[in-house]
Structure formats: structure tokens, C-alpha cells
Image (tube, rainbow, N blue to C red; front, side):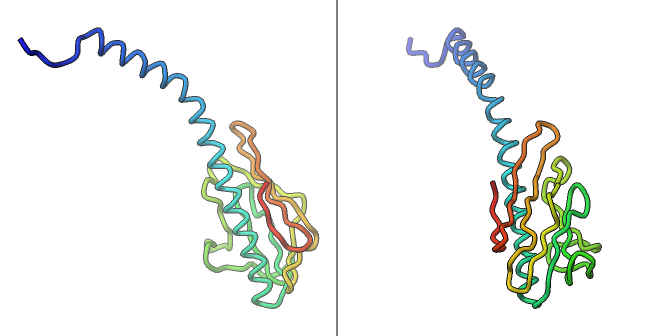
Length: 150
């Protein structure tokens, strides 16, 4: 007799090994997903801050990047008391929301103001925080106007 297939014992061994591996890998994948989401949001925030710098240069004015709420930023032309800028990436009130705004919060040391030459005064740091696990990423704006994620 030439029967092909797997015995019940072989199938149980394979399922036990698969279950053990899944149990070991799941926490690492979960942690990686949270870290990757935070990093992606920090890069998105850096892009939005760079948009403020580009608007300042292209319109030959100052642009203030302010934290409008815990979950979004807003650009103001003419300084921090100026008009709210609306354009690509903003909603009707001029807010630029980060993609994962349901769980991440934004805070800053100071509202950065970009000059018409692209320099920042004062230099500042924007911090993204995940309140679930207290993970943070910072977006640093140097006095030269360079924006970097750390």
C-alpha cells in the first residue's frame, strides 16, 4: 500500500511549534509597530514644519508654526499673531493634522518663526508623545531653519 499524507502526531508537533513561535514573536512585532508609527508621524510633522519654512521663503514673510491643539499644528503668516495659512494639507480652519492623531500628542518648547530667508527664530523642539506607552520622538528646528527628527 502506497499511502501519502501526515500522521496526527506530525501535525500536532507542527502546530505546537507554530504556536510557540507566534507567542514569542507577537510582543516584538507589536512594539515594532508602535515605534514605526511614532517615527512615521514624526517625519510627517517634520514635513509640515518644513512647509512653514517654504511658505515663509516663497511669500517673503515670516511664518509661525504653532501647536493648535494636542493633535495638530497651524501655520500663521506674518508671525504668531498673523493670519492663519490655509492650503494643501490643511483643513478649513488651517489645521495640519498628523496621520495618527487619535493616539499621538504634540507639544513644543516654543513656537518657531521662520524668516523670509528660511532661518528659525527661536529654534525649537516639537515632541510627539504616545500616551499609551509614553514613547516619544522629537522634531528639532535649528536656528538655521534645518528640521530634523530625533
